[in-house]
Length: 291
Ligand code: NAP
Image (cartoon, rainbow, N blue to C red):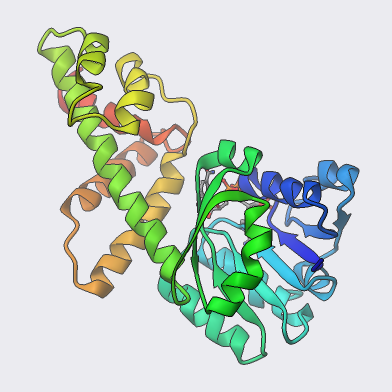
């Protein structure tokens, strides 16, 4: 069994690392802010003093931090993973970051004979807890096959999308599609309420038809109540839309709905709602409609 390391024990990373311990992997872990490794150490993981120490003790290093500069910091910063990893080490980046930066990180690691796959996840904190994440993987086939057992301990649906960066590009597509769903449901719910319809009856009436969606089934209730507990933070989705809009510019694609969602999310963040669930897009539509 390969020795595994884990860098970044946030909401997602801590739960994913716990599933690796449960699967029997010898696991070295590190988090920037101290104190987050405690529950994992109680389960049998070993806390390291830096990403470099994690890499020195592992054959495969999983990374799950916030954004592109954060992945760069843990890979190449002082006491970073690349300083401790032996040639032949495999990095599995489960953060959601830029596809083009991912390709550049992989090339820099490749110069040191360190391999990398991008493996962003979808399925939220519940998926991380229950090891049911959907994982979209980019990289060389042999590296993806090598990462598979580790990914299978953390997720249920694992798809090799293509070369390095293809997992991140797929995650960007996911985030573009969901913002259209949220905005469409928000507009429909606000229209229903202002048109004098009972919104719950509208949701149940439409649930078997073409307007049916996960967002309509699971998030319309919050939009009716105008309460937006987490879920998935507006700030995180806004970060992901920035990645998607950059990718669209690089690919020569126009994304009017994603661009509008990004502007509405800017407004939510400026208004102090960045930590709400992204169904708070309905807050913006309500405001525009004088509700
Ligand atoms: P989180 O709870 O905010 O945790 C972020 C983690 O990254 C923390 O461990 C944080 O360390 C670490 N970190 C951030 N910047 C760092 C830096 N410069 N150097 C070292 N460590 C750094 O976020 P999360 O929800 O776990 O999300 C992690 C990734 O998964 C993100 O890319 C996110 O988009 C993606 N994701 C999240 C969800 C979700 O539902 N939450 C779903 C799918 C994908 P500290 O403890 O020191 O702050």
